Image (cartoon, rainbow, N blue to C red; front, side):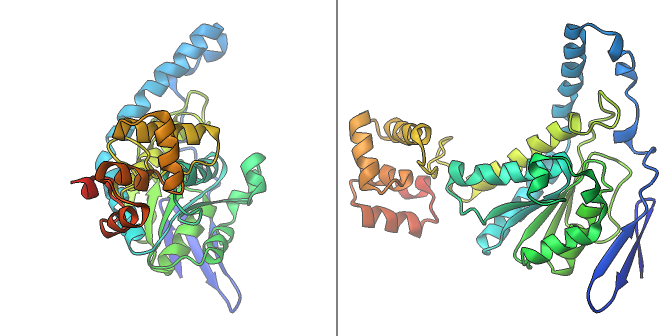
Length: 321
């Protein structure tokens, strides 16, 4: 059978062992992310300060491009929150910069929001080695993307975000196609107008940042837009599932000196007690900042404070109200 992804034929071959997706992406010259930027053509003739200013001027437009996608980003968040409530996961799939940004976002959530490391995960073309060293050819095999989704045992409760700034990366397309086969919910994040998967995608987030400062270097504006959007997806989702009280990360894990200091200061800020009392309270709450706050504000012991938090889905505000 044949599917069509933009201008590129996508052929699926099935046998008793494997499914391969082969995509002809030899000519990408028509893509916006591959166009030359008329404003930076003479960048190699500029002074150091002028080059820095040119890059900064181009970056300034990224925020507008991301803002135009605010409704799609919000829908993506709601999809992710629904998945979390159903016991599902958020899985990022990408290659190169896109893959590394997904892995970075996933890695930052456990210490910041106290999430299980398996709740938000990232996969990258070329595997773990590609996080630290460029393995450019790895992205050309869609079957590897499908394999990584299979290995993660993706199912209907999960959300898979395919990150491909150009919108044509075979690895990402293979991952999304396999995720859809498994009835997972899917989000397609790209920075091109011309690229849209022909198979069903739940949500498309498409910040159009325009041609890069250096032609084709999507680690720059497109990468910045990707980072901003991933921040929004996970941070907003964490707020929506009770990981934040006011604007404080009350579900952080105090695993080092910095986070311990922050945990104590959060308790001090919310309850008005001293540093020494906050330290004792945090110990009595077994390191759980949310429980410590409820214990102090409502004069409860640990079991009762935890019970009330559990009854209100972990939302501190709901308990205190």
